[in-house]
Amino acid sequence: MLGRECPAAECKPKYFKVKPGTGQTDSSSMACPYCAQVGDPQEFSTESQRRYARDLVSREAQQSVSKLVDGMLRDAFGLRPGQRRKSLGDFMSIELTSRRPTPRLVTPPVEQQLRRDLVCPVCSVAFAVFGLATWCPDCGSDLFLEAVEAEFKVVRAMLGDVQNRRERLGARVAARDLENALEDVVSTFEAVARRLVHRRLLESGMPALDAEKRVKKCGNAFQSVSRATIASVDLVAQDVFAALDASERTELERTFEARHPVTHNAGVVDRKYLDKSGSLEREGHDVAVTTSMVTRAMELAIKALSDFHERLFPTS
Ligand SMILES: [Zn+2]
Ligand SMILES: [Zn+2]
Image (cartoon, rainbow, N blue to C red; front, side):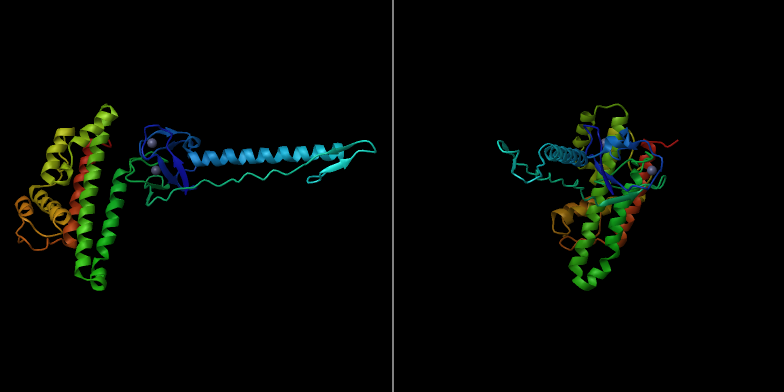
C-alpha cells in the first residue's frame, strides 16, 4: 500500500494508505478519509516521499555533473579519473586530482504500519487508516459505519476464541478476555458517539475549537446509557439511543455498568455497581461478563449508532 498524507494543515492524523490499482481506475482526485479534504492525488504525497524524490533528483544531478567533468578532463588533458599528474610536453606538467564523489545515499521513504484495513463497498478501493476513518479516499462515500463495524469485528474475533483460551489458559484468563472485550465495546461506542456529535457540530457551522470544547465538556457521559442520552440531546438535539426500546436500554445500561467493577474494582461486584445497574449479582463476587452479554451489547450499540448516524446525516 502507498502512504498518503492529507494536505490540510489542521487535519489529524493525516496519514493513510491506499492500495494502487483498487477503486475507481480514472480517479483524478483524492479525498482525505479523516477530514474529507479533496485534491489532486499528487497533493497527497507524504513528506518522506517528497524528500525521496528530491534526493533522487539531486543524486542524478551530482552524477551527471561528475560525468561531465570527467569527460572534459579526458578531452582536454587525456586525464582519467583517479590519475593525478599529466606531463604536457617538456616544460609543463599539470597536477590534477580527480576524485569521484561518493554517491549520495538515498533511502526510500519509510511507510508507517497501519492496523485498520478497509475496503470501500461502493468503489472497492482498499485502504488503511489510523483510528476511525469517515470517508472513502477514492469515491468520497461516508464509510463511518463500516469503520465502526470493522472495530466490532475485532471484538467478535476475540470472543470467538474465549472458549479455546479457557481450556488452554484457565478460567481467569477467559474472564479477563471477556472483561477486556466489554471495555472495548464501551470505549468504541463512546469514541464513535463523540465523533458523530463532533462532526454534527462542525457541519452546523460551529468553529472547530468550540466543537472540540463542547464534546470534551461532556466528559465520559457516553460510557453510560442514561448520561449519554442526556448529553446527546443537549449537544445535538437527538437521543443517541432513540432506536432502542425501554427494555433494550435497560439491558445495555446493565452491560455498560459492568465495566466499572472491571475497570475500578478488579472485576469484583461492589455496591455502586449494584445500585447503578440494578443487577441481582452479589457484592464481593466476580462480576459476570459473558460472551452473549458482550455480543448483544455490540448489536444494540450498532443499532443505536446507525440510527443516530442516519438522523444526524440523512442520506436522502
Ligand atoms: Zn485530512
Ligand atoms: Zn469508495
